[in-house]
Image (cartoon, rainbow, N blue to C red):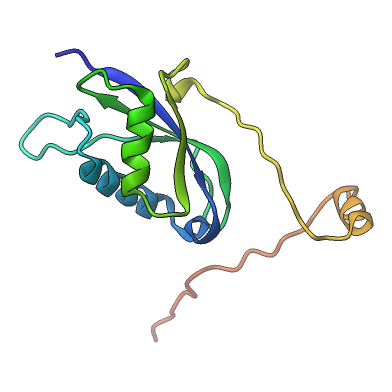
Length: 147
């Protein structure tokens, strides 16, 4: 049975920006199961649905055009795929477009980002004009000394 490689673009805004990459993966996998889309599963003793995210954002970042790849076992119209996924996803995660991938996800090496901030433009220009920016790194765990 031929598989149809599929790329879905989605937005992750509002409260969903606080979903970690791992939790986003779990959320999408649950939505795929609830949508009853015929998605390809890995083979073996414990098959699981395979979904790959292309350049996922860090926690706390909103995304207007995030991407995920998966394979369908049937040729389903892209509009129907988006509709079924949106019916199963939380309100702050919306599939905006579904299409065939042009490039493999491993071949995508860059992305374009837009940063919006309420920082004073003059202070931002002064900061970015600095020759070096020193950052103090604090360890997560302090070493314990046993006597």
